[in-house]
Amino acid sequence: MEKYQGKSVYGAIAVGRISIFKRQDVQVKRIKVEDINAEIARLEAAKENAIAQLQEIYEKALREVGEANAQIFEIHMMMVEDDDYNEAIIEMIHGQNVNAEYAVAVTADNFAEMFSSMDDSYMQARAADVRDISNRIIACMSDVGCDNSVSDEKVIICADDLAPSETVSLDKNKVLAFVTAHGSSNSHTAILARNMNIPAIIGVGEQFLGQIKDGDMAIADGFDGQFIWDPDEETLAVAKQKLEAESEKKALLQKLKGKENITLDGTRINIYANIGSVDNIGAVLLNDAGGIGLFRSEFLYLENNDYPTEEEQFKVYKRALESMATKKVIIRTLDIGADKQADYFKLDKEENPALGLRAIRLCLSRPEIFKVQLRALYRASVYGKLGIMFPMITSVSELEEILAICEQVKKELTADNIEYADSIELGIMIETPAAAIISDKLAAMVDFFSVGTNDLTQYTLACDRQNPHIERFCDPHHEAILRLIEMSAQNAHKYGAWIGICGELAADTTLTETFLRMGIDELSVSPSFVLKVRDAVRKIDLTK
Ligand code: PEP
Ligand code: MG
Image (tube, rainbow, N blue to C red; front, side, top):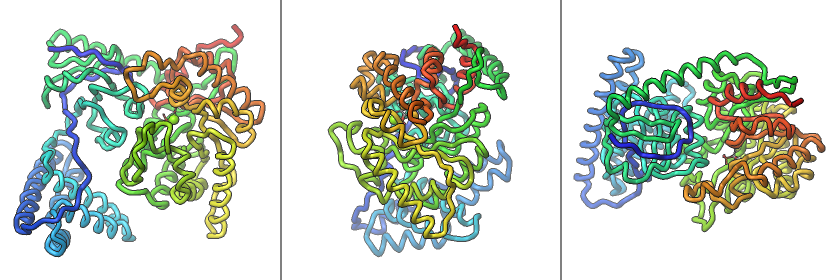
């Protein structure tokens, strides 16, 4: 047994087996090859390996989830051996003298595109499958080897660090907890872990990776930030007790479902939820959130290998709005850049990416990308109650430019005879000191503000939110931050806007009363914190 002290970013506990995160180079390069036959032999070996993996998964699924659910793996096996698919790959290797990985990747793209463009929804769904099997074959050819982990058991993912794009690509249903050697508590990976409602411990130090092995038992104790490798019986028993206590506490909070977010003296507040994907909506509804206060749309871009099309985005936004019915859904426009990188954006390397071409700056620099997203959002607006929010605002002129682009998009939609709602709320994030300081001017131009305390803290205190070494200087309770929030709240109300907080601080119940006294109208938190914040609100008496 060995204990490693880290920093907890989500208070929950997990007991289970370790799975060490294997980083795979997903970028397939085009390489000229001389020996075509050797390349085809590599392809055949990889396919054989992929089929063996699929067979194993199929049998396990058959035992555990039944024939109907297992069938998909049978289809995958058939797809690996499909004549058209294989001919296309081999033709490409022969015709262009390229490596097999590249031929598989290009064929996958072509087939996926062909499937997506079919009218039949069953065939459309095959696009994802062809990509899936192709990735499996490519993984089997890569140096990192093929991923043989076919276990359906939930595992504790251990890694040196995880990028947001890596976190989103993990199968959430199989993750019990995250434990990383590095990382900081305000990083997007930490935020994702909170959204996923699972224990996450960061900064346990590099040495733990040298000790652990796949399949070892461990405890990720997000209550005290401890990662315990190979626990003894006694430690396991204590952890199990904590697990039980946790589920009892959760059950108690469940009693608050359906209750109002109202203080003892009758002040009401909205409690909404933050999400990174439509897959989180189940948790939003389960935890009785009043709406979605922040949909980080950039994860849609991070999950893809290319710009999501207007149609793809439209479908996602429509689904979010329909699922939330009459409840508000605030979708934030693309906030890519800094730690959230997608290769296909081909962004230049920057000295200070957090101060660089990110979020709205990127959208205003590449309006063609921005307009695709806005068109998708406006089109989806007829399916529910949409709010659109713009990140990283620093000036009035930026906002004027954004509003002009929105008008242009609406005009184009009207010209195309495409409907959009006329009651869409437009708002901005207050996450730079500049925005808070000129919040009087900005409030007059929008319907709402939402304070992004993660970035507001970073930019106000000059503390890189990714840097674990300066966390002690990075106090989100700093008077400067609270004054900026208060100032923004006063200006919002004076100029007719409402104001929420969607940064991580919104879930800090030691500040709930302070926020209520400032007049904050909405708190948007990870779905799993909604009831905890409701509980805090209901215990506050503002007359005292
Ligand atoms: C914030 O900065 O507080 C925020 C909510 O945005 P993100 O964490 O996605 O940067
Ligand atoms: Mg932010």
